[in-house]
Image: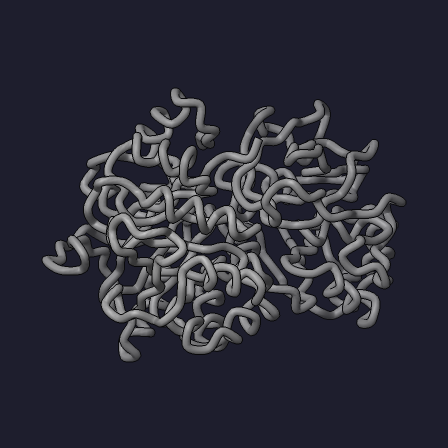
Amino acid sequence: MLATVIDYKAGNLTSVVKALRHLGAQVTVTESPFEIAGAERVILPGVGHFSATVRLEKTGMATALRDIIGRGIPFLGICVGLQWLFAGSTEAPGCGGLAAFPESCGRFSPGRKIPHVGWNSLDIRPGSRLLAGVPNGAFAYFTHSYCAPLIAATVAATDYGEPFSAAIERGNVMGVQFHPEKSGETGLQVLRNFLEWRTC
Amino acid sequence: MLTRRIIACLDVRDGRVVKGVQFVDLIDAGDPAELAARHAIAGADEVVLLDITATHENRGTLLDTVRRTAERLFVPLTVGGGIRTADEAMAVFEAGADKVSINSAALARPDLISEIGAKFGAQAVIVAIDARRVAGSPVKQAEVFVAGGRKPAGRRVVEWAREAESRGAGEILLTSMDSDGTRSGFDCELTAAVSRAVQIPVIASGGAGNAQHFIRVFREGCADAALAAGIFHFGIADVRTLKEQLQIDGIPVRFPC
């Protein structure tokens, strides 16, 4: 199992890489769009600010990712990586996302602690390949202030004063708002499903 | 529903977990990697490694301990003790930590909070505050202490917590030095004052002795998470048993699958 993890200087990749290796994956970490072109599956991690994703456009990585997604290569965005699949985020109004989904991400409304930090439950829609084997109501670890709305591609919703997309999946394009590398056995199962994902 | 977190803290000296009352009479409590894994299996939502030697010569030992502990730990791992610069924080992150906890270095140079945050995200920076207050005095007057609770830092706890938040801290780890090691309960009043003063999550620490103490600090102390060290060693109270008791009392907690 080969997995390519994109490094765009947005935080720490150690935990993601470690979890993938633990599951038996051969992991390549790269910031080069050329290396992405030959990838078997791609993971876009990300902690921090949406504006960090500007680097993806600047380096040509965004174009390379559009290309591999178009060719059916499995793609998983984690945290800000999920949000980047949308058209944009109010966190960085000037920066566009990939716009695989036309909606935008926004900040949690006031009246609760922000960021949303900790273990929250997943309300799982049946039929998800990414979440196969994860029991409904399982807990995952989140840490974020902005979130994606519920859309047709939402396969898990989580509630934090308002429901938001905890996981999305449309064909080979997948994203999780939680950190699968930090979500115990639940998270490892999600990563395992992604690593075993095959185009039908 | 967002659950309340139970965090297991391991005090580490020279690569071994130690346990003592207020850092004296230290007893060897085992291997950090092994204990961290055991706590995670029992349901600890996070693990904190606190380096209590924190001398320069032993940084290598600490990084090795972090590496070994992170190897098979798939819940968030925080490392604290002696981190003074963004470069030292980076070494700890590269060894496998997800967050760092900074204390006296942040007081000495508050810019450290934003420096680490800018590079690794605010979620990766916990500002630890050691608090003391004269029994019965108003919580507003609680003071920040450094050097293991021996030296006053000349700051009020609530005000410093607010400043840490405005400088980009992701969470506050609030330890009541008065309660620490006593097993007589958390300082709920102080925890509530800090929790209401900031938007970011507050982790209560110091004084955990039984399940009722956790219930009270979640209810009355408005804590988002509670940390304990001593009671989880030697099997005195494991996380699972604690969580079962919290659940019966209506506190939302997570059980691992």
